[in-house]
Length: 418
Image 1 (cartoon, helix red, strand yellow):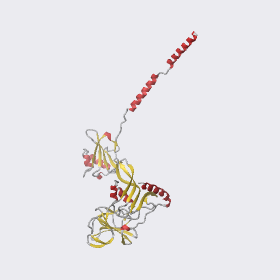
Image 2: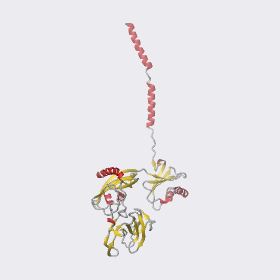
Image 3: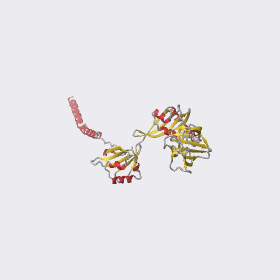
């Protein structure tokens, strides 16, 4: 019994010694863990330097000087303020030749100089903003190229439902929508709607895309679909591409572009209509007025309503003043009168394209104020331009109609929800 007792005692002692001898040490593990944590702490607490860029140049390396081109100011005057030598300015001008004409710098445009961070504040870069989107980068190093950069553009989709009481422009303003969208819409619907004859009750629903640069909107409008209600009738504008050509079509697949435009100039008012017995404001007597007078500021562009050939360019002292006559085909011709001047290159025999500028509004001849007297002749007989019909251009082809129908139905469904 005594012997058995000692056996258990020695077994217990052996177990304790085994645990002490062979139990893994935590010291090394603890040191490894501490070392790993130390490494992690170094990574976590290291601040990565953020680099700021302006016009693609790391701006933190420079002192930035910004300005606006002043009246009668040019590149030489701007750079002279920063003690750039005439020789250096000449060298820069020569490098700009194939990329940017320095003489085109305009009053009111922004510019930026990147200056060295030293006591001399030596110019290193000059940036000129051509417009809201593009800018010219001039590196002062002689071996560097001058180039045109472009700011990041963000496109946003918008919708608008606008009721018209007077003009489309005013309606856009009242609806807190950019009124210049009216110009894009007037170009799309130029062949379908008389924008000088809009009436109360007309309206438009439109889905459009607009570009933004630095959160500032650009006046570029991509109309994705529209329904213009004019005198109770809906005029659809459905964008569709066929034969690699993009155009707008009505709900039946007919092109909105016709042989003739509805009017030969943009945004004005009709001061006198087609009449066989109108009181002439200068002659002070009644006589026929076989045209439409569009009141507009002097210098407003006048464009041909259709393709054709210039057959007359002349001056009529006791009548139309400076005028141009265009023959469109064997049936139709048009005349544009009281022009202040003719567009460059307009001569008898010149072929012109629809929408091409042929002259500018004026008050030459017998006129009390600046306006365009516009006349249309069918087979040599004057007709009312506002009542002239015009055949459409190529419609959606039969093989493309199933696809067009899907596009149309989807877009119309979206428009109806506005």
